[in-house]
Amino acid sequence: MDHFASAPALSYKGSMAIFPRPVSPKSALGDFWGYFRQQRQHKWPLLGLSVALTWVIVWTFVIDANTNTMPTRNKIIYVQSWDANRSDAAVILQQKIDFAKREAALRKEQKKMQSWADAFGIEWREEEARNSARRKEAVKAIDALLDDRLAKAEAAQKNGGQKNGMQASAAASTAAAGAARP
Image (cartoon, rainbow, N blue to C red; front, side, top):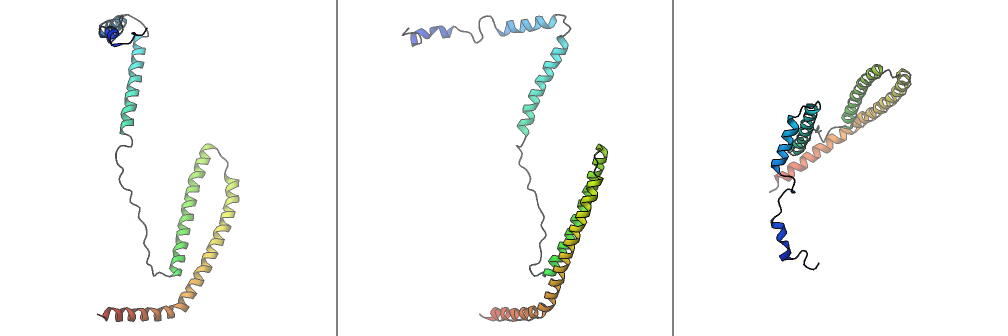
C-alpha cells in the first residue's frame, strides 16, 4: 500500500481516455441519431421543450450580463435659487402658493384613486366624506396661520423698511470708502 500513488505507479493514468470506456463522442452521437430516427409521439414536443428551456437559460445569462453594466447618466435636479435678500413676506407668500399647488395635486391624485376604487368595487365615499371634512379644517387652520404670519411679516417689513434703508445706505457708503483706500 505504500506505493499506491507513488510516481512509478502512476503509469495507469497515461492510458486513460477523457471519457469513460463505454462513452465516446462517436457512440454518443450514434445513440442520439438512433433515438432521433425512431418514430415516437413524444419526440418533437420534448425536443421543442428542451430547445426552449435551453434558449431561456442562455437568454437569461445574456440579459444578466448586460444588466447594470452601463454607466448611468447623471440625473440633473433643478433647484430654485432664491434671492438672499428676499423678505419674510415673500417667503410666506411662496409657501401659500406651494401649499395651494400641493392641495390641488392631492385632490387630483385622490380622484384618480377613487376611480380605481370604483373599478374594483371598493366603497370609499363614507371615509372620503369624513376625511375631507377633517382635511378642510386642517387646510383652513394652515391658511389662517400663514395669513397671520404674512400679516406680521408685512407689518415688520413696513416698520423695519425705514431702518433697513438707512442701514443699506450706511453699508454702501462704508463699502465705497473701503474701496477708495489704496
